[in-house]
Length: 240
Image (cartoon, rainbow, N blue to C red):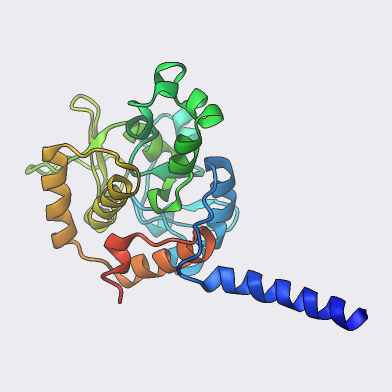
């Protein structure tokens, strides 16, 4: 009987191990809260830097401003200044854009969708759409869509090259982030049907070509696959 029990236990371990590497296994998606906890399994080592400004941060999410010449925009007495001191998980496709057409959003916004809508919970926690960002920049970006200007605006955050235009309600990300942002939008459209406007599609298609997939982006996709169980095909297909 003991040997039978050992064999059964061994079989269970084999099944679990196979499910973790089987490319046909169903993805293990999390809600936003749980995904935020799991993302430490993705963002470590060389990937432990913010998307919008390229700032390094440690395991306790303390931002190293000197690594990217970042300077908070706001007065130290304001709450948004305090947000500059912490890392937040930023949605490339915003929660508003994911949920605005859902009944749950009309009945109570993001809070209601997060609590009661299964589809929104999965979208909100999808790691392919989440990146570390300095809290102040995340807050300034708000629900604004991305854009690119022909002029050269003044920096807002010291040496960080990401700019937010509050009047136009647009955000211009630094060049290193543009291809990443484009491919995240393509993924969310393909996976969840989140619509792109003609203008956004044209911009993202240009960014996808101008700023190709890097080895860091490939490594991020591989790590997400180990945790969540699926790839972003717009990244993965270019990593082979």
